[in-house]
Image (cartoon, rainbow, N blue to C red):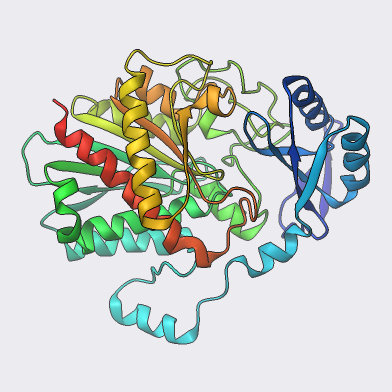
Amino acid sequence: WHWVVLAGLCLVWADEKINYDGSQLIQVHGVTNKLKEKLFKLEDEGVLELWNKNATVVDVFVKKDKLEAAKDELQKAQFQFRVLVDNLQEGIDVENPPVPEEEEDLSGRQGHRMTFEHYHRMADIHGYLDYLAQTYPQFVKVETIGTSVEGRPLKVIKISSGVENAKSVWIDGGIHAREWISPASVAFIISELIENRDAHIASTKGIDYYILPLFNPDGYEYSHTVDRLWRKNRGKSLSCSGTDLNRNWGYHWGGAGSSRYPCKEIYAGKSAFSEPETAAVSNFVLKHAGNMKAYITFHSYGQYILYPWGYDRKVPPDYADLDRVGRKAAAAMRAVGGSSYTVGSSAATLYAASGGSDDWAKGGAKVKYTYTIELRDTGRYGFVLPASYIKPTAKEALAAVKAISQEVQQTR
């Protein structure tokens, strides 16, 4: 580590890879509202970090140097808990095996490096988008809609139906850097909708797709090079780096489930749309909002299909439609891959999270079918999902997109 003291604050120059040797993922059961407050307090004190949580079960991440204190506090509060991942670094080390030499040779011949056996870096993902635009120019186009804090392009691929004034669907992945299965699954969806187009035409006919596989390219790259568990973008402040891009949207911005403190994982930013990534995407969506009938954002983990609202335990007037289509998507995912996905409104099913993209898409851009889909798994691996799970997870994600698309085909 390299340390520097500035204005009385001790800062880290993040130029060496962070090691999570001995850190654990612990699942806490039978969590009541009162006990949940205790967990929030422990998180505020820096003892642990809440990862996945629902009404009665919470996954907590604990660094090695905090393990004894965390387990003592959990026992004192009479929590029931078990260790899901005994050593997170061991999982990180084997999560993404290197690309074999023969695969590297093949990539040169096929014109891109993209596979669905590995988690690829930004250059490979963006290179694949460019390859698709060059190979299928009659219905595929790539557009850079803005740049990230550090100047990386935000590349959207448009898959055109060929229908004038067509209905459209927005899909994004990777808004949270550490959720690697999200951009991998979105890249697979892109591949199927283009390179295997005929197999899906019944579900997708008449629809234009706008897809952003890497919403947070700076954070994603940082999660590969320095901190595997990095969540936010790489915006700078005096004390801590990064804004949670899924708390930065201008619909009930700054409310419950977000923070005004830059060092928090759920820091909402200086103001709504303060970050170039959210500003660029919101401007693009508004430009196309007249025809946009669905907004699907992929996250991990937990296996949920969530619809608004996230800012409070309320639902939109048309929640019955959202719930019905969400359940249809869950059934399609289960039929393809066998995984069970829980369906419900965000705040009621999980927890309040104000300033989210799904709430803004519904309340701000007035998109009919708006979903946050939390992909695999349910805690065995958490965010560190082995690359061997990419294809089965991505096939489920594609099934959800097709189910929602079929509803879009029926909407006016």
